[in-house]
Length: 462
Ligand code: NAD
Image 1: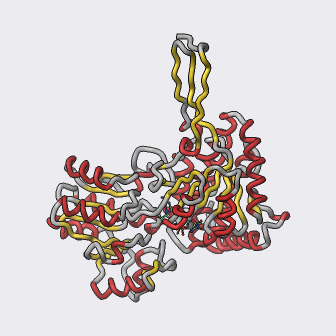
Image 2: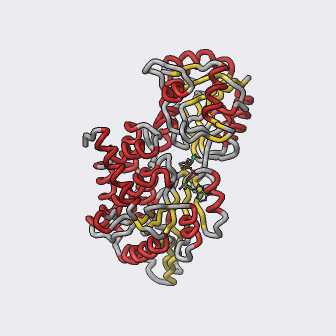
Image 3: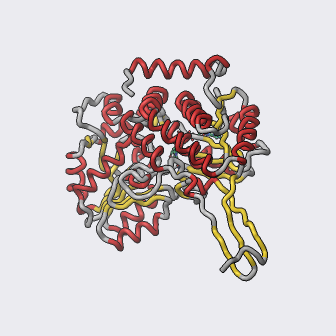
C-alpha cells in the first residue's frame, strides 16, 4: 500500500466522522456500538457461537486476522500517528508486522494429563467467556489486535473500551478482526467496541455480570480501578525501565542498542529504555558513543527549559509524549541537525526528566560509583513497578545480581529493549505485559481458565 499524507488524513477523517454520526447503518464499521450494554449483549451472542466452533476454526479466524493485519499495517500505523500525534510510522508498521507474525494462537493452549490405575485426569484450559479489555493510546491498534488474537485463541470474545484519543484507529482494528472472522466462517462481533468510549462506559463494562475477566493495559490509574472492580483483573501497568551499563560491557554496542531501543516508536513502548544508570568509569566513553549514535547533549539551562515544557505544572504534557527528539528540541527553541534521534544529559536520579516515565526519547544518565550503587539507583528509578529493566554487561555475577534485585517481568541483556517482544530476540510478542498482577507477557493461555476433567477407573491404557 502506498498512501499519500492527504489520503491518510482523509481516511482518519472518514472513520472519525462515522464515529461522530453514531456509526450509521449505511457505513457501519463491524463491531462498533453506541451503547455499552448493546455491545456486551452482542459479544455474549458471538461467544455462544464461538463455543461451538472447533479449535481448527478458531485458528482459521486467527490466521485471517494475521493476514489482514499485515495487509493493513501501513494504514493502521499512519492512522495511529495521525490521530494521536504520537510515534513513528515506520516503527508502528514493524510493530503491526511483529504482532501479526509472533502473537501466539491456539498452539499456546496446552493440556495437562495424569493417567494411572484410577483412570485419566485432564486439566484443560477453557475460555472465560466474554472478556472486557481496556486499551491505551500509545499502542492502540497493536494492543487491540494482539489481545484479540490471544483472547479468541482461548475461545473468548472481547469487549473493548479503547482510549478516546485513539478511537478511530482502535475501532478500525476491531472492524478488521470482525471482517477476518466473518470471512473465515466465524461470527460477527467476536470483538466489539464503542463509537464513543468513556470512563462511564468502562465502568458499565467492569460491573457487568456477564464479564468475568477484565484486562487493563495502561497507566497506574486504570490498573488500580480494574483491581478494585471485584472481578478477576489482569493489570498491565506503567513502567520506567532503567538500563544499567557496567564496566565490563561492550560500550560501543551498548550505546547503539540503547539508542535504538529508546527511540523505537519515539519511546512510546512501556518496555523502552527510559534512563541510563552507568558506572562512573565508563560514563565518558558511553556518552561518546551515544553522541556517535545521534544523541544531543543538553546543557543545564536547556534541561530546565525542557523540564518546564515536558512536565507542565508537574504534570506530563501530553503534547510532548511520543514526539521525536528534534521536535521536542524545536519546541524549546533548539535547532539540531537531521541525524539527532535522542536527547541525553547527566543528572541525579531525582531529576524530574529522569525519575518520571516520559515516553519521549530523553535519556538522563545517572552516574554510579560501582555495581552496588548502580543496582541501588536503578531499583529506585524503577519505582517498584516490577515492569522492565535492561542491562549491558559481560559479568554473569553482575547480570544475575541485578536480575534478582530488580524483579521485573522483563529483563533484557545486551540488546535493545524491544528484543523482549521477540524483535531481535527469541520468544513471542505481546503488547500487554501484566507486570502488576504477575502474568507477565500475556498470551492465549493467560486468557483461559483451568478446568479439571476426571474419568475414574477407565481410559488408562498403559
Ligand atoms: P492511560 O492510563 O491514560 O489510559 C489507558 C486506558 O485506561 C485508556 O483506555 C483510558 O481511557 C483508561 N483509563 C485511564 N484512567 C482510567 C480510570 N481511572 N478508570 C478506568 N479507565 C481508565 O494510558 P495511556 O496514556 O493510554 O498509555 C500509556 C501508559 O500505559 C504508560 O504508563 C505505559 O507504561 C502504560 N502501558 C503499559 C503497557 C503494559 O503492557 N504494561 C502497555 C502499554 C502502555
